[in-house]
Figure 1: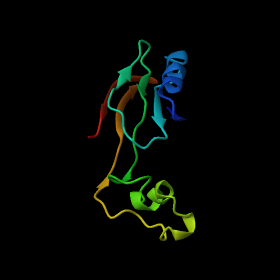
Figure 2: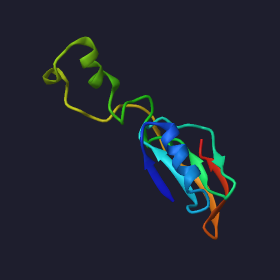
Figure 3: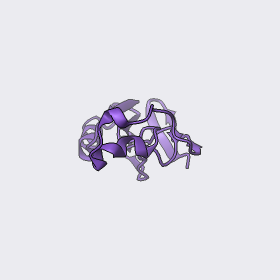
Length: 111
């Protein structure tokens, strides 16, 4: 299984296509926003552009959006309150794979 940490979906998908059959799965990370299209390539490599994050929902990397919004208002970082976890319901993003003999036979999301 390969964790491909990149912004660009096309980079992840091209890589997964290039190694189809050599890895059970290529699961993208980076944006923290889950994508929902699950792919199973011809030689049984699973692909998902972004699994998503585990942490507070509706937050940026687990932090309140107001902490990062200061730059859009033109405020200085020194005016940002201490970083704390966002007070939001938690989520666990995951992909379930059934792998047999190094090949993915089934895949699904947990949400």
